[in-house]
Length: 130
View 1: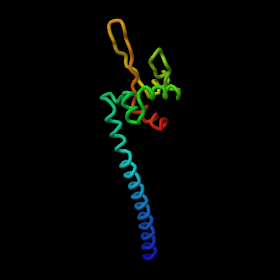
View 2: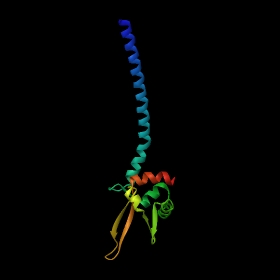
View 3: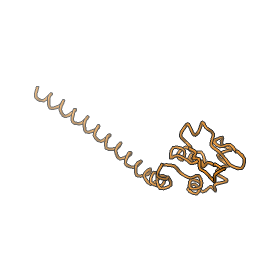
View 4: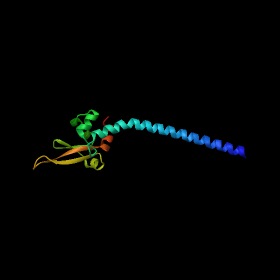
């Protein structure tokens, strides 16, 4: 009876040892992923202003595309449309949280807008533009 209890305990310990080893491997993989992704996250945070928004010219610079070329490419991909001489984000992508627009007064008679990229938008577009 004692021998069977010892064998059962030994099997249980071995199973727990294997589970612990598997958990250690998973932790090592997750640490590796965090180590790989952390510099990217820091870079995006540095690009973003205090509101978590990124100027298109800064995003373009980070990925090696000029501001005008970036706007044209976003139009080609269906994110932007041209209104006069300016590009604007489609409302769907503003609602989806990829872009936002800020209105500002140029002078007493003229109001304009600026399209900004969110962190979510930067993540989505980085994969589409490379």
